Image 1 (cartoon, rainbow, N blue to C red):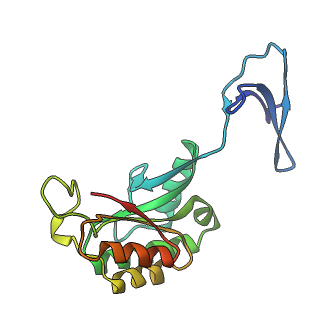
Image 2: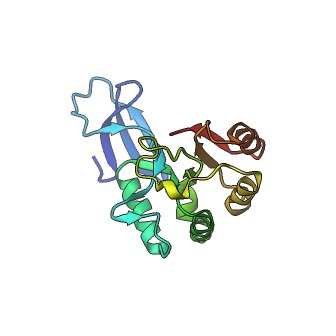
Length: 191
């Protein structure tokens, strides 16, 4: 067997297959009854909807660099996560938008990051400020969602998908959900 070939088990069928790389393409050939012991599994890369940081890189940093973001993406890929939503948590709204604008700029400069970062996940600041509900989120930055917030979020995110986690009990939450969905975002109820 060449160094660019592997015997593995297909994740969906359990069938043993030979995987080879040829001219930039992955090819699989069934190996029924070959007696070869599979050396792993063949499966699509995972997708993670909430990545706050990885491999020592915290995405909440205001001075995050392109190389730090690439490092996190490469380490996620090496761990089997091919695409993910970069997640920011509750903070002062203007600071949160500056941070997202910076991250969007870094992503736009790298085809590798455009492939890896499938979108943005804002977990807060539209969450409950009640003790026992906000977890690690700083309660002093919790807000009721306003249309101006959501339009600014869409302007900063551009065409990149957004998942917004918000507490449905916040004042204006139902209208915010309707507005977010009308602008193409997804909304997840949360604490």
